[in-house]
Image (cartoon, rainbow, N blue to C red; front, top):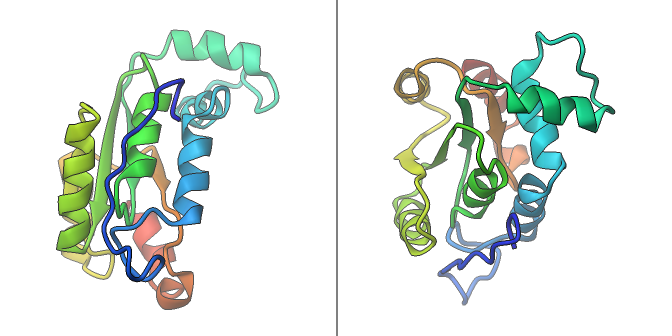
Length: 173
């Protein structure tokens, strides 16, 4: 469930439940649940208003007032989208706020699965190939977004494999 809406998520890889990029891993499920939850989604979206000194992280009412006046578009990128659940939950969780959500992955099978899930759920989410190990890919993603992303999400990103590259990739995004 995301924002009171039930998401349909197709997956593949049932023979290797957590060894496939096209399966919703538990960490992805938990991050999707968080991203879709109010007021959690409002609090992280509010990070976009970091220049507003009147807002404090523990003042939900002030967050809601400030978010009501937000005119800028909030841009969200999901790394390693797999089936697209986190990106879809974030898009739904942002509700009426102006947002652009991008789901990204390096695996073609994940991109196909995420694209199908976005279509099944009738959401407007960009799905793009992104290899964090490629500086040109990172620059292209930022350029396509019109600048750095406001929020980058990722679950079960295999930190043991990417621990040296991930900080630089996040800084670029």
